[in-house]
Length: 181
Image (cartoon, rainbow, N blue to C red; front, side, top):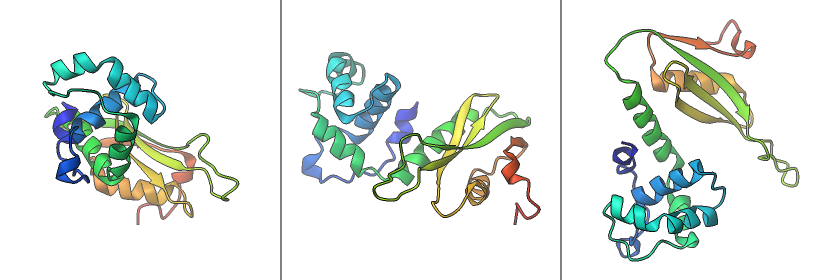
């Protein structure tokens, strides 16, 4: 279960400020986002609505649900690279079925809608994703630096994942002579 991978996250809070366990706030936030929550208030509302069920199913012993400011402070304090590493480890555990058969991985870059800021003169955020098409799992994703394109991000993810026996599908952008240097 994903909870075992979230357990490895470092908690940035002092010991006195840990009324709510980090792994459960992150897990419940994921559940809320999957239920179409788009803000910290909606995540906190999701936890409040399902509080009794979550409290009993996970044996939390919480007396009340966390406020949206608590949820916000906890989520904002989590290191993005650390949570990405947890998700990668989780997706790797789902794909490790003991078979050494070839798999198909689709690699594609996307621009996050609404992420540009014309006032601050910032480009839109681009993300490169590796998607296992047979198991229908996102293996990894990485933000593409502002002053580059997908190629360096692809090379880094390819080294990091080390997916052998895979057939990769990519855009025409990657059809260059010195791609894998």
